[in-house]
Amino acid sequence: MSSSNVLSVTILGSPGRSLALALVASWCLRTLAYLIRVRKLPPGPRKHVIMDNRGDMPYPMKEGTWKSFDHWHAKFGSVISFYLGRKLVISLGTIQAATDLFEKKGSIYSSRPRNIVAGEILCRNMRGLGMPYGQRWRNWRSLMHASMSVEASSQYKPLQDAENKLLLRDLLQHQNEPKSLSGFIRRFTVSVVTVVSYGRRIKSLDDHLAVAQHKIDEYFIRANVPGRYLVEIFPILTRLPKLLQWWRREPEEHFANDSKLLLGLANEVKERMKKGIAYPSTATRALEKQGAFGLNDLETAYALSSPFGAGSGTTLSTIDFFLVAMLHYPQVMKKAQEELDSVVGRDRLPEYDDAASLPYLQALIKETMRWRPIAPIAVPHSVIADDTYEGKFIPAGTTVLANLFSMSQNEEMFPEPNKFRPERYLENPSLPHNFVFGFGRRICPGMHVAHNSLFILISRILWAFDVLPITPDAKLPNPDKTEGGIVIRPAELEYRLVARSKGVDAVILAEAGKAEVQLAAYD
Ligand code: HEM
Image (cartoon, rainbow, N blue to C red; front, top):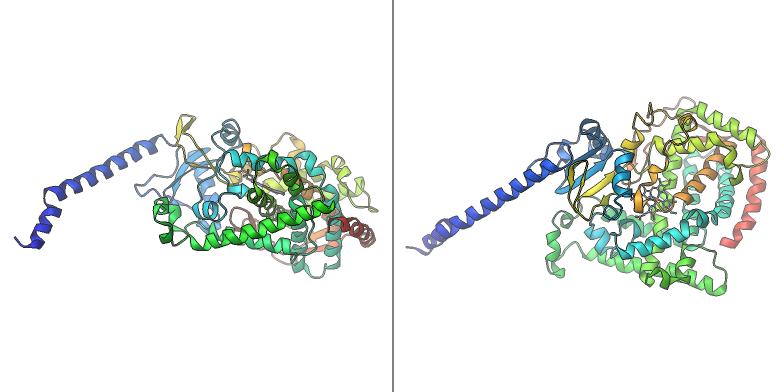
């Protein structure tokens, strides 16, 4: 027998056959176990042997996955399951289901899905938003609570008030350059979060604090693009020797640079604290009581960057959808302006103390957040232990989504959900609105800061300006055409702001002058 024949007997002969049979048997057993398991899962699109349901989505992925999930909710019910790649995902389409799982069973539903590149390598899981549930997250979260509770958030109001007056002046003076307006609103939202984080405002988006944070976030977003890294689909690749892990080098380099930048920003606050000129912020709280929060220097430096990534784009997108709503519903704008004129008058700007006397305006803000939730599937949670809900099995490790879009479009709760109708919140004051901030232990810690920003922005924009189409006969932006990832914004927003009366100029210019003096303390 030749040597090649020996080889083929070894492969195809009895030892080879046994190996092949063992492989087939193992595949059959795994498939059988999978088929038994999927029968116990919540309903959803047909489960394939190859798992992935992306090909079954009724809408193109780039139009927003939540639209497909919403379609499946209508077909299969309020709790559905499907696979994205090999990842099992459960989507919760009602406030009730999200409350039952994320709030009532918060001890097991508060983690985040594993993220190897953007979480484990790029930031050693020190960024709060994606941090897995555990002691480090609890330490981080208690710092967020200490610096953004209702009470702590009210400390930032004087700054939001003064910054907003400068913003109004910019909007007034650039009425004829409508394309520049969004940049001014962005500067306001960024300055608010840098004050919350570091106790320091930014006068321009070129400030090194904003540039550094923006650079860090930009790469973080790039590293999070689904499908970019094979290792996210096959985590077993992390067992390769580090030298052979080809995807590792770039995020490792970014980790080293980001750490240096963030430690530098924290050190600037330390210096200001030494000189006694630091404004109370997340940084001063963290640095004064570092031991109590249990965060080391690097963990603290990363914690301070959380509000930047999570707080500026979200507020800006909400304002963008508010502007879209005003273009489509000028009668709503008019009604809010009439309320402002009768409560505030035309000789002064609306103030925080006016909020309780402006029920229609408050309802308009709630309706803005409901009409088009800017984070349609919130931030995915992960469940850390097996569970059952309404008789269906939810295995440990499943990604669980609060489908805020489906919740916002619930016809029973919000009849004619596609209509922008603030009246619904006046007719039924207990109608939910804070669900857009998520649920349970991971609920947005910045929601009070966000509410304060939205009130001062929306009340004063409507007091001072009419929101109008870019030209009288321009096509209005389509509210369903959006762009972005976890946080979305209108894709084709164009608008003009036109001062409502001559007196507006005098009030804004006088207030902006005083605000400048006041803000010198935060520079
Ligand atoms: C209208 C504006 C905002 C909206 C709609 C919003 C919404 C959300 C949502 C849906 C989540 C995920 C909740 C979950 O996992 O269940 C979240 C998390 C978070 N938000 Fe906001 N947010 C807004 C503004 C802000 C602001 C102004 C800040 C900070 C100043 C902030 C800081 C955070 C942080 C740090 C997290 C992560 C919490 C965690 O993982 O434990 N957000 N936000």
